[in-house]
Amino acid sequence: MHVQDWQADAEATIDAHLRAVVGRDLDTFAATVHPDVTVIIPSGRMLRGADEVVGFHREWFTDGDWTYATETVSSTTTGATATRVLRVTVVGEPGAEPSTFLMGLTFVAESGRWLLVHDQCTVLRPA
Image 1 (cartoon, rainbow, N blue to C red):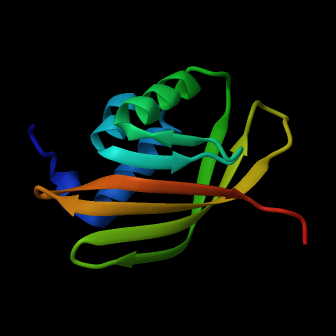
Image 2 (image 1 turned 90 degrees about the horizontal axis):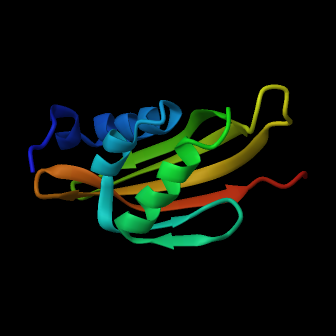
């Protein structure tokens, strides 16, 4: 598999992953996902493996007129892992009430590129 320049750098890969979600770019999204990825979506449903995760996103990317925005809360990179915690705001359709949650992403360095291995979403509750 040909590794794109952005895939060799953790921060560039995470940024490409997030831009792929915002832009509904399934090919780039899939290129950032580890074969053994685990994703826990805000409802608590767990998705396992790249096929299930990419399939979920394929359907979501074609579903409606939602918008998706992120704000970085924290970011840490070591030689083998990169994590980012983000505040995510999703609006299901124009004029709809926004939904906000925290998302923790963990990427691992593997074969000269960075891949998402875990994505955990937690819905924020009123204080």
